[in-house]
Image (cartoon, rainbow, N blue to C red; front, side, top):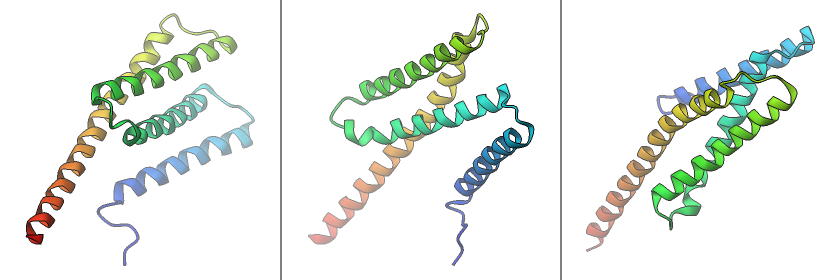
Length: 141
């Protein structure tokens, strides 16, 4: 039995990459004693990735609402968190004049792509499950 196969290859690559990257950031901080901007940015991206993935994973709780409302609600919640993090960061460091716009675009574009992929996969799974149910019902007759 193979632990890494075609179905999980890219997931394993992403997990290993993430662990190596986080380990590198931690090691640099321990050895150099400096926590640079790029390290902070990577950790913020990691945190936002966790939050966005969690929020998307909660779709099943809101299936009784129209999909567009759920997607917009999820996005508004997440972009609010992004802007709050930017605002809090501005209390400790001087922000570029376009910081909010840049954060908006840096989050919105990848998030929109991720949402399209995620919901396409969800609907593909639903369609496959409905097809399987249909075949089961046909065999029961």
